[in-house]
Structures are given as C-alpha cells and as structure tokens.
Image 1: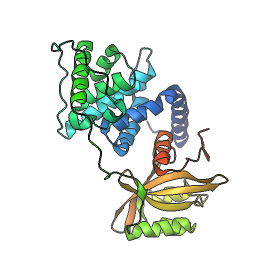
Image 2: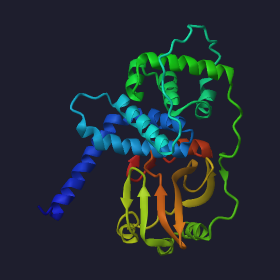
Image 3: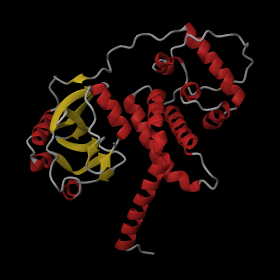
Image 4: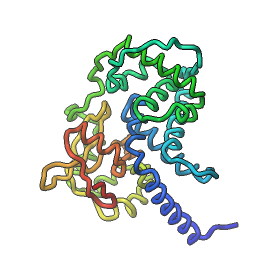
Length: 315
C-alpha cells in the first residue's frame, strides 16, 4: 500500500502531538535524570548523549507497556540498561551484584556523597555505580533498584554496604583540571574560524557555503535536517539569530557559545559544535532545546541561560 503525502504529514503531526504529551508526563523527572546520566557516565558530554538516547527510547517504546507505568523508574531503567549495554560493547567489566553475607558493622557516616559522585567510575563497575546513585542520591527503594539493575534487593543492600565501606577507606582524590571550562584562545580549524566570522557578521550565505550539501544539522531533541537545502528552507529560512558567538572550551570540548545580550547582560542562547571533513561542516549539533544541559552549561560558563527564546519558554 502506498502512503500519500497527506498521510505522511498526518503521521508527523500526530507524532509531535504525542511527543508533547510524553514531555508533559516526564517533565518533573528530567532534571534528576540528566544528573543521573551525568554521574553514571562520569562526563557531562557522555551523560547528555545517554540522556538523549534514553528519552528517544522511552518515547519510542512506551507503546509496548500494557500496564500502568510509573514514569520515574521507567526512565531510570532505560538509562541504566542503555549505559550498561554501551559498556558491554566497549568490553568494560560490568560486574555482578552478589548477595554474599556482609557483616553488619557500623560504617561511620562521614561519606561526602558529592565528592563520591565524581569518584564512582574509578572504583566501581557500571552496575555498582548505578546502585549507589539510585539509592544514595535519587532515593529509590531497594526493591525499585533491584528491578532497574536486574538483581535482588538483598544484592542491592550488600553492594551498597560494600561500596560505602570502600568509599570511606579510599577518599576521592582531587580531580585534575584537564576537563575544565575556559574561554578558548588557541587557534581553531580554519573552517570553524570562517563559520564563526560569518555567524557574527550575520552572513547566512557565508555560513551555508561551508556546509556540505548533505550536512546533518541536529538540534538535539528538537529537529533534524539532512541537507543544506533542508536547512535553507527550514531552520535558516528566516536568517541567522544575530547574536554574538564566541569560542569556549566547555568540559574539555571546543564549542561555540551564542550569547543574547539582554537588558541584564549576556545570556547563553545556544551551544554548538561542528564536525568537519574535506573542508566542509558535515555535522552541526545545537543544544538549543536541551533545557537541563543548557542550565548546567550556563552555570559552568558563568553566565545565565536565556530562558525566554523562540519556540521554548523555560520560565
């Protein structure tokens, strides 16, 4: 059966309506979920990728649920098992959660959980890290955690006790500054410099000229465009935003930050990075729609995030 153009448009419209309903269903859990993904992976960038993959999977698979579903453990279950699957592919040790008898000794409660969060992946396996985060930080019950990481409540309790003992005996070391955030002053790829100049000059054709014809333009969890022509008739049909763009190193990655200069001073409008091959931008990624990521980034950069901008309103 051939699907008409009107039918295709109807499918797209319905899917967007359903996505809006889904976002409303999970909205109260997304900030915590983003933090969970960040600490589980040990990186804001990897955590953001895991968060996005989790949200896409959660929306795409919820039709398979035939029973009433609590959105919070549903999201954390998908995030946890997606990360474990990634670790398996990288041939990392996933670890098992044993129910072995653990002496009921009193462990001094001197553990600094905030410091421990940045120390987890250096001491523990992905499954152990998930148990600690879910129990100690996000207040799930042992029964809920057992369901999320696919084990038993007894194994959760025993694992947590062993982890707390190890963390007390091996306090976190001071992190290096290799992943720090700063204003970039080193020279960049000439294509990035060309893109930055065109952006700041409001030169739309100059910007488009350095994209490949089949460039992938991605505004994460917002929209996707698969060619320069789609960009011209889609996200760039009304021109460039006209905001100031500067290079920064954010959590160790070179990015471009767009600033909106409002009445109260500079606000972070967007964060972008690009991939280049053969002298052309082949992948452009924007975090314009990513509320949790944008707020965390703005805190890291030292500027407030723009909360009232076209299409989104984060007031």
